[in-house]
Length: 215
Image (cartoon, rainbow, N blue to C red):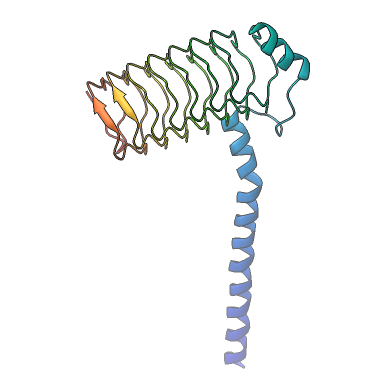
């Protein structure tokens, strides 16, 4: 009788543990989209861009505060475009010419800038969380105070870029070029700099990948 009671107790314990694990997994799956939406700067799932705003941008290159979420802007000539505080979450700007464009305060979470030319662009105070900037030209770009959590920058050229006070937690900077790049006060925890070229980089008050503070 004692053996049977013990077996029943062990079975109940196993069921309880299994139930707890399932609850934990379900809670994680419920929480994950909320976490991703917050990184992208979204309160709700991504919606299509406002077509009138897209046409306005392509015609005038002036589209501050426009709704361009998920817009297809690949290969577009948007030199010196005014996109201050625009919402470009999830937009595709791969291979676009964005030299001197003004994105100040814009939401670029999850946007694609693969092989784009962003040299001299103003990207200060923007949300670039989860953005793809693979092999992007960011020479002389201003990214001061921007959010780049989990951003992808392999092979990106950040020569003389201003990255002061940026959040680069878990960002991928492998094979990136950082010549004279200003990273003062940046948060670089868990960032990947494998095979990156670092020459004359300023790191005063930056939090290094291992969590230590650089004085």
